[in-house]
Amino acid sequence: MRKTFALAAVAAAIALAAPLPAAAQSTFSTRQLTPEAALKVAQAALEQCRKGGYQVAVTVVDRGGVAQVMLRDRFAGAHTPETARAKAWTAASFRADTVGLAKATQSGELSSGIRHIPGVVMVGGGVPIEAGGTIIGAVGVSGAPSGEADDGCARAGIKAIADDLQLGG
Image 1 (cartoon, rainbow, N blue to C red):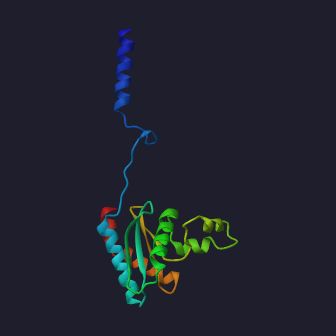
Image 2 (cartoon, helix red, strand yellow; image 1 turned 30 degrees about the vertical axis):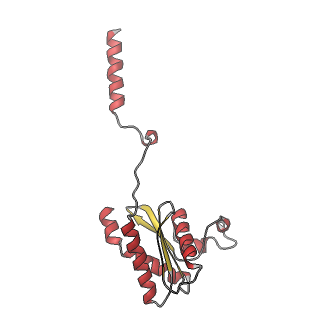
Image 3 (cartoon, helix red, strand yellow; image 1 turned 90 degrees about the vertical axis):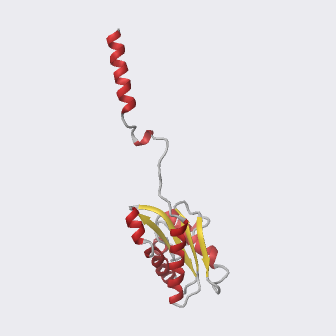
């Protein structure tokens, strides 16, 4: 009996010391953009659009789509802040850029129903921000003459922190 109890005690100690499988863990860690990095993205995107002669709004959201930074140039249209936020939210939510999503969700495509989800904006200018294979946020730009131009400004914003993302990778 003592031998059985001792073996059971040893087995229990080994089981408790062993790492838990991922499914049994109760918490996890995530990476987040700092407010400083989000601001740097927004400022660089705004500057790129200004170089092209565009008055835009830029919004940077966290991985969950919550706004961290919003900048609106002085003559950007009244609709641009909300449109930029919605583009960023769409890119973060679907983990894809809105130029590609706009093409994949056109009428007649299998994914066209996505366009009917409240808050989704399928116009170019929303780009996910990725670090180490993980989406950590997204940037949305609105106000340039095309979604592709908005997209270019958004990508310039991300490029401004690319080295920082690789270092933290």
